[in-house]
Image (cartoon, rainbow, N blue to C red):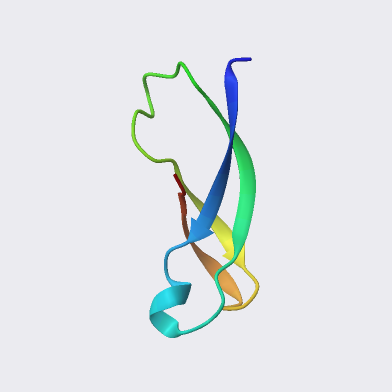
Length: 57
């Protein structure tokens, strides 16, 4: 399969002392456009706003 299942975790929640939100997503294994960790802006229900979520490894 050319796609991996990844977990995205909030980067701003730890600094504020709130629980982190996590999302699952997929990424293309063979993509040359994203060689590093994937970053997406997703909604964090604990902070009640959209925050940056980064891929866990």
